[in-house]
Length: 185
Length: 185
Image 1 (cartoon, each protein chain N blue to C red):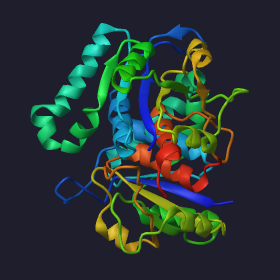
Image 2: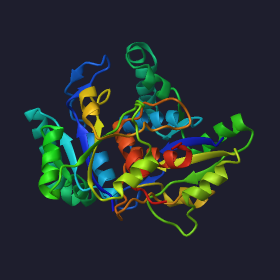
Image 3: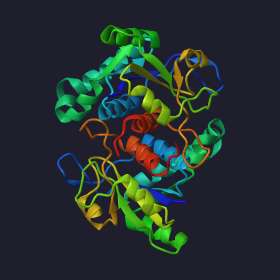
Image 4: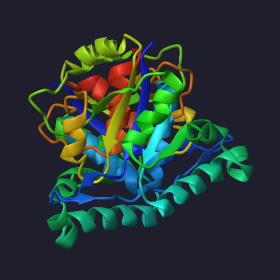
């Protein structure tokens, strides 16, 4: 069985001009990606932001659906959102995983760009079959900062359809990539 | 080449209790699914609602990103949203496609439930290879009304991951299904 963790990163990411920014939490990112994570049996979903007020906002969103009225109204959302863990940095998420697994996870980044070292899906499926922990990292805004991409153990190939348009939302990209890696057909 | 159209349906769909309702437009459904549609080379994206005020809202969202500031700020959103066509009913979308194609499309519904006649992805990939037009229909809220499912030519298998949790957002489901049908790996 693959042993996958997912991180959604709000810092360091780039804006339209390529400058490093901290992006804001998007409510539907948390809902959609936690449902994807639950569907494909991912171990946990780290939402990465260094901003305290944003961390508090994540807590409020989770709490709405895991306690009281929201949990009663829609238990399937509770089951999904319960898998969210807040982390200040990607390294913190990695250390949290290491505390459970006894080994630091391999870091795998996703990108809409092709790199010389990008790994295809079939090859990466065979790599994760070993059962070693992997943290699959998604960026928000205009994508992950180069510093994160340079430090990664693996870079996944961009998703390609039948056109050269590659501007999927991170919600859809996370769904498609997890399905490519762990979907049953 | 597959010859696919996509419809996102707001009526008739069911609520939590199974009653027929008209659901409200969700802004991010339009953005995310039009970007998926653009990525995989789908011909057009029909947003189906019989409510006039909701049709006007769709027009406003498209207009914001296809004219003026929005189009200039982010042309990739314009390219995606330009593919949206508003339809009052699924049958109207079908007639609109027939006007272009010279033949009424096959209607294919998606569902989180398995039906005795559900078709798997590999089989459906071979069916659409013929190039005949197909309208792939997604529901909002708690899914398409049974009347729509009963009238369809094909019912696609639900998406299965490594668990029995099957509560994906329609945004993610559309991405995953189009990738299964038309993605290149």
